[in-house]
Length: 516
Image (cartoon, rainbow, N blue to C red; front, side, top):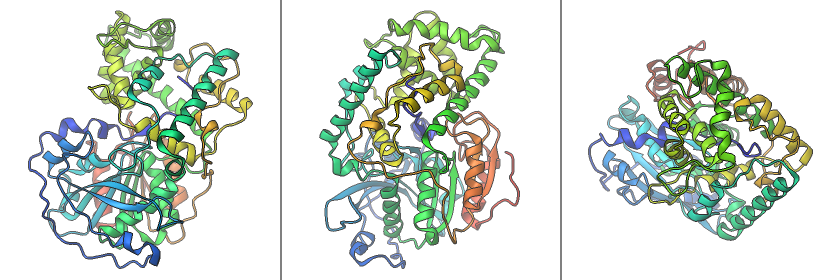
Protein backbone atom coordinates (compact mmCIF):
# COMPACT_ATOMS: atom_id res chain seq x y z
CA UNK A 1 0.00 0.00 0.00
CA UNK A 2 1.22 3.54 -0.70
CA UNK A 3 1.49 4.69 2.88
CA UNK A 4 1.65 8.33 1.83
CA UNK A 5 -2.01 8.07 0.78
CA UNK A 6 -4.69 8.04 3.43
CA UNK A 7 -7.23 5.25 3.46
CA UNK A 8 -10.53 6.63 2.28
CA UNK A 9 -13.29 6.41 4.87
CA UNK A 10 -16.91 6.20 3.86
CA UNK A 11 -20.19 4.56 4.69
CA UNK A 12 -19.78 0.99 3.37
CA UNK A 13 -23.45 0.03 3.26
CA UNK A 14 -24.24 3.03 1.05
CA UNK A 15 -21.89 1.60 -1.58
CA UNK A 16 -23.94 -1.60 -1.50
CA UNK A 17 -27.35 -0.01 -0.92
CA UNK A 18 -28.58 -0.59 -4.47
CA UNK A 19 -29.08 -4.27 -3.73
CA UNK A 20 -31.58 -3.67 -0.96
CA UNK A 21 -33.18 -0.68 -2.63
CA UNK A 22 -34.57 -2.75 -5.48
CA UNK A 23 -37.35 -4.02 -3.24
CA UNK A 24 -38.74 -0.52 -2.76
CA UNK A 25 -41.81 0.39 -4.72
CA UNK A 26 -43.19 3.59 -6.11
CA UNK A 27 -41.95 6.30 -8.41
CA UNK A 28 -41.01 9.92 -7.89
CA UNK A 29 -43.69 12.53 -8.36
CA UNK A 30 -42.84 16.09 -9.27
CA UNK A 31 -45.81 17.30 -7.20
CA UNK A 32 -44.59 18.27 -3.73
CA UNK A 33 -45.85 19.97 -0.61
CA UNK A 34 -44.71 23.57 -0.34
CA UNK A 35 -42.44 24.27 2.63
CA UNK A 36 -42.62 27.50 4.57
CA UNK A 37 -39.40 29.48 4.20
CA UNK A 38 -36.81 29.48 6.96
CA UNK A 39 -36.97 32.49 9.27
CA UNK A 40 -33.24 32.50 10.06
CA UNK A 41 -31.60 35.79 9.13
CA UNK A 42 -28.83 35.50 6.54
CA UNK A 43 -26.55 38.10 4.92
CA UNK A 44 -28.39 40.14 2.30
CA UNK A 45 -25.93 39.23 -0.44
CA UNK A 46 -26.69 35.53 0.13
CA UNK A 47 -30.47 35.82 0.59
CA UNK A 48 -31.34 34.78 -2.98
CA UNK A 49 -29.48 31.49 -2.51
CA UNK A 50 -31.39 30.69 0.68
CA UNK A 51 -34.72 31.68 -0.87
CA UNK A 52 -34.44 29.77 -4.15
CA UNK A 53 -37.05 27.18 -5.14
CA UNK A 54 -36.11 23.59 -5.95
CA UNK A 55 -37.69 21.95 -8.96
CA UNK A 56 -38.11 18.43 -7.59
CA UNK A 57 -38.21 15.71 -10.23
CA UNK A 58 -37.50 12.03 -10.78
CA UNK A 59 -33.97 10.84 -10.02
CA UNK A 60 -33.40 8.70 -13.10
CA UNK A 61 -30.81 11.04 -14.61
CA UNK A 62 -28.90 11.69 -11.40
CA UNK A 63 -25.76 9.58 -11.57
CA UNK A 64 -25.28 5.84 -11.23
CA UNK A 65 -27.72 5.61 -8.30
CA UNK A 66 -30.44 7.54 -10.11
CA UNK A 67 -32.45 4.55 -11.37
CA UNK A 68 -32.48 2.97 -7.90
CA UNK A 69 -33.56 6.23 -6.32
CA UNK A 70 -36.32 6.60 -8.92
CA UNK A 71 -37.74 3.21 -7.95
CA UNK A 72 -37.61 4.14 -4.26
CA UNK A 73 -39.97 7.09 -4.54
CA UNK A 74 -37.21 9.63 -3.98
CA UNK A 75 -37.18 13.01 -5.68
CA UNK A 76 -34.11 14.85 -6.90
CA UNK A 77 -33.30 18.45 -7.67
CA UNK A 78 -30.55 21.04 -7.87
CA UNK A 79 -29.55 23.92 -5.63
CA UNK A 80 -27.30 26.79 -6.66
CA UNK A 81 -24.55 28.00 -4.30
CA UNK A 82 -21.66 30.45 -4.71
CA UNK A 83 -18.35 28.94 -5.74
CA UNK A 84 -16.69 31.46 -3.42
CA UNK A 85 -18.76 32.75 -0.50
CA UNK A 86 -16.52 35.83 -0.41
CA UNK A 87 -17.78 36.64 -3.92
CA UNK A 88 -21.49 35.70 -3.90
CA UNK A 89 -22.12 37.52 -7.18
CA UNK A 90 -19.46 35.51 -8.97
CA UNK A 91 -19.42 31.99 -10.33
CA UNK A 92 -21.91 29.46 -8.96
CA UNK A 93 -21.97 25.68 -8.66
CA UNK A 94 -24.97 23.36 -8.72
CA UNK A 95 -25.49 20.82 -5.95
CA UNK A 96 -27.51 17.66 -6.60
CA UNK A 97 -29.93 16.80 -3.78
CA UNK A 98 -32.32 13.92 -3.14
CA UNK A 99 -35.33 13.69 -0.87
CA UNK A 100 -37.84 11.20 0.49
CA UNK A 101 -40.70 13.22 1.96
CA UNK A 102 -42.11 12.67 5.44
CA UNK A 103 -45.11 10.38 5.52
CA UNK A 104 -46.83 12.00 8.51
CA UNK A 105 -46.61 15.07 10.74
CA UNK A 106 -43.32 16.63 9.73
CA UNK A 107 -40.77 17.80 12.31
CA UNK A 108 -38.26 18.89 9.69
CA UNK A 109 -35.57 17.49 7.42
CA UNK A 110 -32.58 15.29 8.19
CA UNK A 111 -29.57 15.91 5.96
CA UNK A 112 -27.27 12.90 5.46
CA UNK A 113 -23.70 12.49 4.23
CA UNK A 114 -21.99 9.10 3.67
CA UNK A 115 -18.38 10.21 3.99
CA UNK A 116 -15.41 9.87 1.70
CA UNK A 117 -14.58 12.59 1.12
CA UNK A 118 -15.73 12.17 -2.44
CA UNK A 119 -18.66 9.78 -2.07
CA UNK A 120 -21.99 10.61 -3.69
CA UNK A 121 -24.64 11.18 -1.04
CA UNK A 122 -27.84 10.91 -3.05
CA UNK A 123 -28.53 7.25 -2.26
CA UNK A 124 -27.81 7.79 1.44
CA UNK A 125 -31.50 8.63 1.87
CA UNK A 126 -32.23 4.92 1.46
CA UNK A 127 -30.34 4.14 4.69
CA UNK A 128 -33.23 5.49 6.77
CA UNK A 129 -35.98 3.88 4.69
CA UNK A 130 -38.27 1.75 6.84
CA UNK A 131 -37.37 3.51 10.08
CA UNK A 132 -39.62 5.70 12.21
CA UNK A 133 -37.75 8.76 10.97
CA UNK A 134 -39.45 8.67 7.57
CA UNK A 135 -42.77 9.30 9.30
CA UNK A 136 -41.71 12.66 10.71
CA UNK A 137 -38.77 13.88 8.67
CA UNK A 138 -37.93 14.53 5.08
CA UNK A 139 -34.77 12.46 4.50
CA UNK A 140 -32.35 14.45 2.35
CA UNK A 141 -29.07 13.49 0.68
CA UNK A 142 -26.70 15.63 -1.35
CA UNK A 143 -23.64 15.42 -3.54
CA UNK A 144 -21.17 17.96 -2.16
CA UNK A 145 -19.66 20.49 -4.53
CA UNK A 146 -17.45 18.90 -7.16
CA UNK A 147 -18.74 15.40 -6.40
CA UNK A 148 -21.08 12.93 -8.09
CA UNK A 149 -23.97 14.61 -9.87
CA UNK A 150 -23.08 18.11 -8.72
CA UNK A 151 -21.76 20.43 -11.41
CA UNK A 152 -18.96 21.09 -12.20
CA UNK A 153 -17.14 17.93 -11.14
CA UNK A 154 -13.60 17.44 -9.94
CA UNK A 155 -11.91 15.36 -12.64
CA UNK A 156 -8.21 14.58 -12.91
CA UNK A 157 -7.73 11.27 -14.73
CA UNK A 158 -9.60 9.55 -17.54
CA UNK A 159 -10.80 5.97 -17.07
CA UNK A 160 -7.90 4.63 -19.14
CA UNK A 161 -5.42 6.71 -17.13
CA UNK A 162 -6.91 5.44 -13.87
CA UNK A 163 -6.65 1.81 -15.01
CA UNK A 164 -3.02 2.40 -15.94
CA UNK A 165 -2.28 4.13 -12.63
CA UNK A 166 -3.71 1.21 -10.65
CA UNK A 167 -1.36 -1.16 -12.44
CA UNK A 168 1.76 0.79 -11.41
CA UNK A 169 3.92 -0.56 -8.59
CA UNK A 170 4.02 2.35 -6.14
CA UNK A 171 5.87 0.56 -3.35
CA UNK A 172 9.46 0.88 -4.59
CA UNK A 173 11.36 2.78 -1.90
CA UNK A 174 14.67 2.98 -3.76
CA UNK A 175 15.82 6.49 -4.78
CA UNK A 176 14.69 5.78 -8.34
CA UNK A 177 11.32 4.48 -7.15
CA UNK A 178 10.76 7.53 -4.95
CA UNK A 179 11.68 9.87 -7.79
CA UNK A 180 9.27 8.11 -10.14
CA UNK A 181 6.46 8.23 -7.59
CA UNK A 182 6.90 11.94 -7.00
CA UNK A 183 6.95 12.54 -10.75
CA UNK A 184 3.57 10.77 -11.05
CA UNK A 185 2.20 12.81 -8.13
CA UNK A 186 3.34 16.10 -9.71
CA UNK A 187 1.76 15.12 -13.01
CA UNK A 188 -1.48 14.11 -11.29
CA UNK A 189 -1.71 17.45 -9.47
CA UNK A 190 -1.05 19.29 -12.72
CA UNK A 191 -3.77 17.34 -14.53
CA UNK A 192 -6.22 18.15 -11.74
CA UNK A 193 -5.47 21.84 -12.14
CA UNK A 194 -5.81 21.69 -15.93
CA UNK A 195 -8.96 19.57 -16.08
CA UNK A 196 -10.83 20.87 -13.05
CA UNK A 197 -9.54 24.41 -12.69
CA UNK A 198 -7.81 25.93 -9.70
CA UNK A 199 -10.86 28.02 -8.76
CA UNK A 200 -12.94 24.91 -8.07
CA UNK A 201 -10.04 23.07 -6.44
CA UNK A 202 -9.60 25.97 -4.02
CA UNK A 203 -13.24 25.75 -2.94
CA UNK A 204 -14.08 22.04 -2.58
CA UNK A 205 -12.97 21.77 1.04
CA UNK A 206 -15.04 21.23 4.15
CA UNK A 207 -15.19 24.93 5.03
CA UNK A 208 -17.13 25.64 1.83
CA UNK A 209 -19.28 22.50 2.00
CA UNK A 210 -20.66 23.39 5.44
CA UNK A 211 -21.74 26.77 4.03
CA UNK A 212 -23.55 24.82 1.31
CA UNK A 213 -25.19 22.66 3.98
CA UNK A 214 -26.60 25.79 5.59
CA UNK A 215 -28.00 26.97 2.26
CA UNK A 216 -29.66 23.55 1.85
CA UNK A 217 -31.13 23.91 5.35
CA UNK A 218 -32.61 27.27 4.44
CA UNK A 219 -33.93 26.13 1.06
CA UNK A 220 -35.67 23.20 2.78
CA UNK A 221 -37.45 25.66 5.07
CA UNK A 222 -35.81 24.54 8.31
CA UNK A 223 -34.72 27.01 10.97
CA UNK A 224 -32.23 24.51 12.40
CA UNK A 225 -30.27 21.59 11.02
CA UNK A 226 -30.77 17.90 11.67
CA UNK A 227 -27.73 16.03 10.39
CA UNK A 228 -26.49 12.44 10.18
CA UNK A 229 -22.88 12.18 9.05
CA UNK A 230 -20.94 8.99 8.52
CA UNK A 231 -17.14 8.84 8.57
CA UNK A 232 -15.79 11.97 6.82
CA UNK A 233 -19.36 13.25 7.26
CA UNK A 234 -18.50 13.62 10.96
CA UNK A 235 -15.94 16.22 9.93
CA UNK A 236 -18.65 18.05 8.02
CA UNK A 237 -20.84 17.92 11.11
CA UNK A 238 -18.09 19.13 13.42
CA UNK A 239 -17.15 22.08 11.19
CA UNK A 240 -20.83 22.98 10.70
CA UNK A 241 -21.23 22.98 14.49
CA UNK A 242 -18.23 25.29 14.78
CA UNK A 243 -19.53 27.62 12.06
CA UNK A 244 -23.24 27.65 12.97
CA UNK A 245 -23.59 26.29 16.54
CA UNK A 246 -26.88 28.16 17.02
CA UNK A 247 -28.43 26.51 13.95
CA UNK A 248 -28.10 22.88 15.09
CA UNK A 249 -31.18 21.02 16.32
CA UNK A 250 -29.81 17.46 16.30
CA UNK A 251 -26.59 15.95 14.99
CA UNK A 252 -25.52 12.28 14.85
CA UNK A 253 -21.88 11.62 13.99
CA UNK A 254 -21.02 8.00 13.23
CA UNK A 255 -17.44 6.84 12.62
CA UNK A 256 -15.67 9.92 13.91
CA UNK A 257 -12.72 11.84 12.59
CA UNK A 258 -10.92 13.49 15.50
CA UNK A 259 -10.29 17.19 14.68
CA UNK A 260 -7.43 17.33 17.19
CA UNK A 261 -5.40 14.70 15.33
CA UNK A 262 -2.89 15.73 12.73
CA UNK A 263 -3.08 13.75 9.47
CA UNK A 264 0.15 11.83 10.20
CA UNK A 265 -1.21 10.43 13.46
CA UNK A 266 -4.52 9.67 11.77
CA UNK A 267 -2.76 7.56 9.13
CA UNK A 268 -0.90 5.56 11.77
CA UNK A 269 -4.08 4.98 13.79
CA UNK A 270 -5.89 3.86 10.65
CA UNK A 271 -3.06 1.40 10.02
CA UNK A 272 -3.54 0.00 13.51
CA UNK A 273 -7.28 -0.24 12.86
CA UNK A 274 -6.82 -2.21 9.66
CA UNK A 275 -4.29 -4.51 11.33
CA UNK A 276 -6.84 -5.24 14.05
CA UNK A 277 -9.49 -5.93 11.41
CA UNK A 278 -7.09 -8.23 9.54
CA UNK A 279 -6.31 -10.14 12.74
CA UNK A 280 -10.03 -10.58 13.47
CA UNK A 281 -10.63 -11.75 9.91
CA UNK A 282 -7.71 -14.19 10.07
CA UNK A 283 -8.98 -15.68 13.32
CA UNK A 284 -12.46 -16.10 11.89
CA UNK A 285 -11.04 -17.62 8.70
CA UNK A 286 -8.86 -20.08 10.61
CA UNK A 287 -11.85 -21.25 12.59
CA UNK A 288 -13.68 -22.31 9.45
CA UNK A 289 -11.07 -24.70 8.08
CA UNK A 290 -9.32 -24.65 4.70
CA UNK A 291 -8.45 -20.99 5.24
CA UNK A 292 -6.20 -19.45 2.56
CA UNK A 293 -4.24 -17.80 5.38
CA UNK A 294 -3.71 -21.11 7.17
CA UNK A 295 -5.07 -22.40 10.45
CA UNK A 296 -2.72 -20.45 12.75
CA UNK A 297 -3.77 -16.78 13.02
CA UNK A 298 -0.29 -15.93 14.33
CA UNK A 299 1.12 -16.88 10.92
CA UNK A 300 -1.60 -15.15 8.90
CA UNK A 301 0.52 -12.15 7.92
CA UNK A 302 3.32 -14.41 6.68
CA UNK A 303 0.90 -16.46 4.62
CA UNK A 304 -0.70 -13.29 3.30
CA UNK A 305 2.65 -11.99 2.07
CA UNK A 306 3.28 -15.31 0.35
CA UNK A 307 -0.02 -14.90 -1.50
CA UNK A 308 0.25 -11.27 -2.58
CA UNK A 309 4.02 -10.75 -2.75
CA UNK A 310 4.48 -12.38 -6.18
CA UNK A 311 2.09 -9.79 -7.66
CA UNK A 312 4.78 -7.13 -7.27
CA UNK A 313 6.64 -8.81 -10.13
CA UNK A 314 3.65 -9.89 -12.22
CA UNK A 315 -0.16 -9.56 -11.95
CA UNK A 316 -2.39 -12.55 -11.35
CA UNK A 317 -4.56 -13.68 -14.22
CA UNK A 318 -8.17 -12.53 -14.39
CA UNK A 319 -10.96 -12.85 -16.92
CA UNK A 320 -10.65 -9.07 -17.19
CA UNK A 321 -7.64 -8.24 -19.40
CA UNK A 322 -6.23 -5.93 -16.71
CA UNK A 323 -5.12 -8.74 -14.39
CA UNK A 324 -4.74 -8.25 -10.63
CA UNK A 325 -1.86 -5.96 -9.71
CA UNK A 326 -0.25 -5.97 -6.27
CA UNK A 327 -1.74 -2.54 -5.63
CA UNK A 328 -5.24 -3.70 -6.55
CA UNK A 329 -4.86 -6.83 -4.42
CA UNK A 330 -4.10 -4.68 -1.36
CA UNK A 331 -6.99 -2.34 -2.19
CA UNK A 332 -9.37 -5.30 -2.57
CA UNK A 333 -8.28 -6.72 0.78
CA UNK A 334 -8.78 -3.37 2.49
CA UNK A 335 -12.26 -3.13 0.96
CA UNK A 336 -13.02 -6.58 2.36
CA UNK A 337 -11.88 -5.51 5.82
CA UNK A 338 -14.36 -2.62 6.03
CA UNK A 339 -17.02 -4.94 7.41
CA UNK A 340 -17.36 -8.51 8.61
CA UNK A 341 -20.22 -8.72 6.10
CA UNK A 342 -17.55 -8.80 3.38
CA UNK A 343 -15.30 -11.38 5.02
CA UNK A 344 -16.84 -14.16 2.93
CA UNK A 345 -15.94 -12.34 -0.28
CA UNK A 346 -12.45 -11.60 1.03
CA UNK A 347 -11.90 -15.23 1.99
CA UNK A 348 -13.08 -16.32 -1.46
CA UNK A 349 -10.78 -13.79 -3.10
CA UNK A 350 -7.72 -14.97 -1.20
CA UNK A 351 -8.61 -18.61 -1.89
CA UNK A 352 -8.86 -17.86 -5.60
CA UNK A 353 -5.54 -16.03 -5.49
CA UNK A 354 -3.92 -19.09 -3.92
CA UNK A 355 -5.09 -20.91 -7.07
CA UNK A 356 -3.61 -18.19 -9.28
CA UNK A 357 -6.72 -16.16 -10.16
CA UNK A 358 -7.56 -12.62 -9.04
CA UNK A 359 -11.10 -11.89 -10.24
CA UNK A 360 -12.75 -11.60 -6.81
CA UNK A 361 -10.11 -9.30 -5.34
CA UNK A 362 -10.21 -7.21 -8.52
CA UNK A 363 -13.98 -6.80 -8.14
CA UNK A 364 -13.50 -5.70 -4.52
CA UNK A 365 -10.84 -3.22 -5.63
CA UNK A 366 -13.16 -1.90 -8.36
CA UNK A 367 -15.87 -1.36 -5.74
CA UNK A 368 -13.46 0.69 -3.66
CA UNK A 369 -12.13 2.64 -6.65
CA UNK A 370 -15.56 3.50 -8.05
CA UNK A 371 -15.12 1.58 -11.31
CA UNK A 372 -18.36 0.67 -13.10
CA UNK A 373 -19.12 -2.40 -15.21
CA UNK A 374 -18.63 -0.38 -18.40
CA UNK A 375 -15.10 0.62 -17.36
CA UNK A 376 -15.95 4.20 -16.39
CA UNK A 377 -15.27 5.63 -12.96
CA UNK A 378 -17.12 7.82 -10.52
CA UNK A 379 -14.99 10.76 -9.45
CA UNK A 380 -14.65 9.55 -5.86
CA UNK A 381 -10.85 9.24 -5.97
CA UNK A 382 -10.20 12.57 -7.66
CA UNK A 383 -12.60 14.29 -5.28
CA UNK A 384 -11.05 12.50 -2.29
CA UNK A 385 -7.65 13.90 -3.16
CA UNK A 386 -9.01 17.36 -3.91
CA UNK A 387 -10.80 17.64 -0.57
CA UNK A 388 -8.09 16.20 1.64
CA UNK A 389 -5.38 18.31 -0.03
CA UNK A 390 -7.36 21.45 0.83
CA UNK A 391 -8.48 20.33 4.27
CA UNK A 392 -5.16 19.12 5.70
CA UNK A 393 -1.66 20.54 5.68
CA UNK A 394 0.57 18.39 3.45
CA UNK A 395 3.72 16.58 4.51
CA UNK A 396 6.51 18.36 2.65
CA UNK A 397 9.42 17.18 4.78
CA UNK A 398 10.91 14.01 3.30
CA UNK A 399 12.25 12.96 6.69
CA UNK A 400 8.72 13.00 8.10
CA UNK A 401 7.43 11.11 5.03
CA UNK A 402 10.08 8.42 5.59
CA UNK A 403 9.32 8.19 9.30
CA UNK A 404 5.60 7.87 8.52
CA UNK A 405 6.29 5.05 6.08
CA UNK A 406 8.17 3.07 8.75
CA UNK A 407 5.57 3.78 11.44
CA UNK A 408 2.83 2.60 9.08
CA UNK A 409 4.67 -0.67 8.46
CA UNK A 410 5.13 -1.21 12.17
CA UNK A 411 1.46 -0.48 12.88
CA UNK A 412 0.17 -2.76 10.10
CA UNK A 413 2.63 -5.63 9.51
CA UNK A 414 0.24 -7.33 7.10
CA UNK A 415 0.64 -4.32 4.79
CA UNK A 416 4.44 -4.21 5.06
CA UNK A 417 5.82 -5.58 1.80
CA UNK A 418 9.35 -5.65 3.20
CA UNK A 419 10.62 -2.88 0.95
CA UNK A 420 10.87 -0.11 3.54
CA UNK A 421 14.08 1.92 3.48
CA UNK A 422 13.27 4.71 5.91
CA UNK A 423 12.54 6.98 2.96
CA UNK A 424 9.29 7.58 1.06
CA UNK A 425 7.90 9.85 -1.65
CA UNK A 426 5.92 12.96 -0.87
CA UNK A 427 2.31 12.34 -1.71
CA UNK A 428 0.18 14.28 -4.17
CA UNK A 429 -0.87 16.94 -1.64
CA UNK A 430 2.73 18.15 -1.43
CA UNK A 431 2.39 19.24 -5.07
CA UNK A 432 -1.20 20.49 -4.95
CA UNK A 433 -1.81 23.69 -6.94
CA UNK A 434 -3.88 25.46 -4.25
CA UNK A 435 -3.06 25.92 -0.56
CA UNK A 436 -4.47 23.89 2.31
CA UNK A 437 -6.74 25.74 4.73
CA UNK A 438 -7.26 23.36 7.66
CA UNK A 439 -5.27 22.70 10.83
CA UNK A 440 -5.71 20.25 13.73
CA UNK A 441 -7.60 22.03 16.50
CA UNK A 442 -10.05 21.64 19.35
CA UNK A 443 -13.58 22.56 18.22
CA UNK A 444 -15.04 25.78 19.61
CA UNK A 445 -18.82 25.30 19.74
CA UNK A 446 -20.42 27.75 22.20
CA UNK A 447 -24.11 27.06 22.72
CA UNK A 448 -24.12 23.82 20.74
CA UNK A 449 -26.97 21.55 21.91
CA UNK A 450 -26.11 17.95 22.87
CA UNK A 451 -24.98 15.87 19.89
CA UNK A 452 -24.81 12.09 19.60
CA UNK A 453 -21.61 10.32 18.56
CA UNK A 454 -21.64 6.63 17.55
CA UNK A 455 -18.36 4.72 17.55
CA UNK A 456 -17.64 1.08 16.67
CA UNK A 457 -15.06 -0.85 18.69
CA UNK A 458 -13.66 -2.68 15.65
CA UNK A 459 -13.92 0.10 13.07
CA UNK A 460 -10.80 -0.15 10.87
CA UNK A 461 -11.07 3.20 9.11
CA UNK A 462 -12.16 5.51 11.94
CA UNK A 463 -10.93 3.82 15.14
CA UNK A 464 -13.13 3.74 18.23
CA UNK A 465 -11.14 6.19 20.36
CA UNK A 466 -11.71 8.99 17.85
CA UNK A 467 -15.44 8.79 18.61
CA UNK A 468 -14.81 8.87 22.35
CA UNK A 469 -12.65 11.95 21.91
CA UNK A 470 -15.07 13.73 19.56
CA UNK A 471 -17.97 13.24 21.98
CA UNK A 472 -15.85 14.83 24.71
CA UNK A 473 -14.75 17.73 22.50
CA UNK A 474 -18.33 18.55 21.47
CA UNK A 475 -19.82 17.95 24.90
CA UNK A 476 -22.01 15.23 23.41
CA UNK A 477 -23.22 11.75 24.27
CA UNK A 478 -21.61 8.52 23.08
CA UNK A 479 -23.11 5.25 21.84
CA UNK A 480 -20.58 2.40 21.52
CA UNK A 481 -21.19 -0.48 19.13
CA UNK A 482 -19.27 -3.71 19.59
CA UNK A 483 -18.56 -4.92 16.08
CA UNK A 484 -16.09 -5.25 13.21
CA UNK A 485 -17.26 -2.76 10.61
CA UNK A 486 -17.04 0.85 9.53
CA UNK A 487 -20.02 2.78 10.99
CA UNK A 488 -23.19 1.31 12.48
CA UNK A 489 -26.27 3.56 12.24
CA UNK A 490 -29.14 1.97 10.28
CA UNK A 491 -27.10 -1.14 9.66
CA UNK A 492 -29.32 -3.61 11.50
CA UNK A 493 -28.57 -3.05 15.20
CA UNK A 494 -31.72 -2.09 17.10
CA UNK A 495 -29.81 -0.82 20.12
CA UNK A 496 -27.93 1.75 18.03
CA UNK A 497 -30.90 2.67 15.85
CA UNK A 498 -33.32 3.10 18.76
CA UNK A 499 -30.94 5.57 20.42
CA UNK A 500 -30.55 7.52 17.17
CA UNK A 501 -34.30 7.62 16.43
CA UNK A 502 -35.21 8.72 19.97
CA UNK A 503 -32.62 11.45 19.73
CA UNK A 504 -33.83 12.82 16.40
CA UNK A 505 -37.51 12.66 17.34
CA UNK A 506 -37.47 13.63 21.01
CA UNK A 507 -33.98 15.14 21.41
CA UNK A 508 -33.20 12.58 24.10
CA UNK A 509 -29.57 11.57 24.56
CA UNK A 510 -28.49 8.56 26.64
CA UNK A 511 -27.42 9.43 30.17
CA UNK A 512 -24.61 6.91 29.99
CA UNK A 513 -22.88 5.22 27.09
CA UNK A 514 -25.00 2.24 25.98
CA UNK A 515 -22.72 -0.51 24.67
CA UNK A 516 -24.69 -2.04 21.83
